[in-house]
Length: 317
Image 1 (cartoon, rainbow, N blue to C red):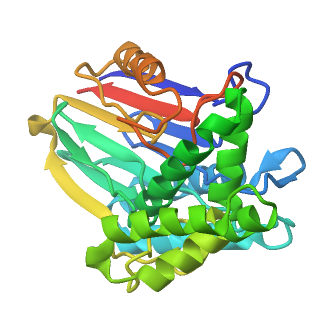
Image 2 (image 1 turned 180 degrees about the horizontal axis):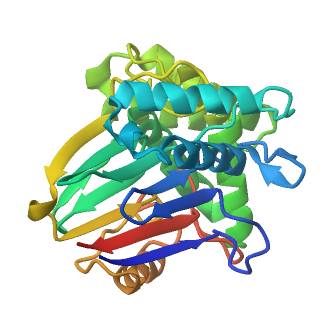
């Protein structure tokens, strides 16, 4: 087996650690974990809540699969174990928000490989089949953020200030933006109307208004709420929802390449090596620096940061 592992912080200088964590035990497990960014930027002992969650779950995976018989546990048993481990570690840490992480994982059995995906990190098999869950809640907040960027763009000469202001609206909410006179009530209504129209088929206009009014800082309230359209599965110490967990098993004889990646790579390359992933990332930065066009996101890049941390594990079997 040939393998490459790459992870880097969104900080262009490396001043801040990544919220992503990679785990690779050859012949046993390969995983990428993307810790959720704390909208308020709180840290404990210099560590973000997202980094904390990703590290704890990676450590729990290492312990669990040190006995390779546990690779045969059901997906719900694995996820419940990881959730309990994280819950036990969260208690008493003092984080303001709920530490949360995604998990995209390959487990190597005798003749097969099991794949398990919780959240929006992804797995690509043989360079053509992609397994990843796109969250409706992220699509909604992204649409709102892109609309706000368009409204505010003419008011700022400095792109970093524009990005910071737009992020604050998306993460801390439209109610706060009106209160602080960043946006008018009429401008907010225009954004709401556009988002309602785009997502009308879900019939959740009131929920969308509440979500956007408070901002992404409230998104955790929908985690592991499998029955709600805005719900999504996450590893954050609460009882897991399996409603959107991706699981499959593929025979090793059918596999040529496996790539496991975080959403810091919005464009998937044609090649499978780390160099190809990094080349695709550079293309994204050149073509859509602010992440408002071909690769929309809840955050854009700035002069000091890429829009997100990024990690990839590339395996050739």
